[in-house]
Amino acid sequence: RQLDVLGDWVDADAILPRQYGKEQPGYGPTEHLYIPNGPLRDVRNVMAMAGFTQQMYLGTPKHPGLRECLTVWGEGPVGQEKVNVNTAPLPVLEALFGETIAEDILKLRKENPLTSQEDLHTLIGDHPSRNQITFSSSYFRIFITSEVKGLPWHLEALVKRDPALHSSLKVLWVSEGY
Image 1 (cartoon, rainbow, N blue to C red):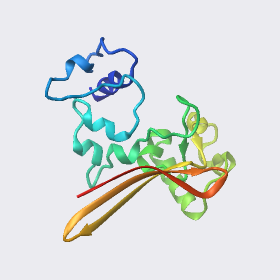
Image 2: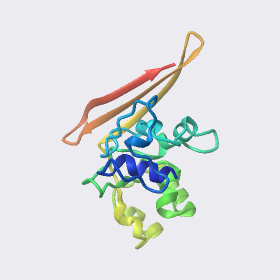
Image 3: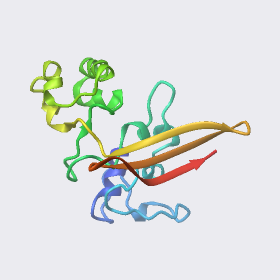
């Protein structure tokens, strides 16, 4: 159901909803939403979509949330984005390669950053997902949790590294609150 809602959020039309989806007319007058009918600008957009919950976004102690497994800031041309095997969380690697290979990739990258297909060849061989990976990133999400006056305080930021200047970071957005 959520895939239909997400599909209607990003598709080009604002009229014909998918079977379980929702276009602009399907949201009630109290929801005051603008459905962009285009790409997500931020993973947090899912919180405004029908059927998506805070738990789905944040996750639970046993299951990571969407904010930890999805990004709208991929590497590569639109529609051909790649996953950085050095920074991807376990659930993303499992979706690409399965549980065993994903765990082996985590072990390998703890020793040294992976830099090429050759680093993974013995693990993945000619696996179909080998063309969906990269070994570096320009975008990074930073999560900080602290305590201020006895209350939990959270900061989330998205930064972009300039590939030409590895030490230069540009802050794209920051969200903070209790």
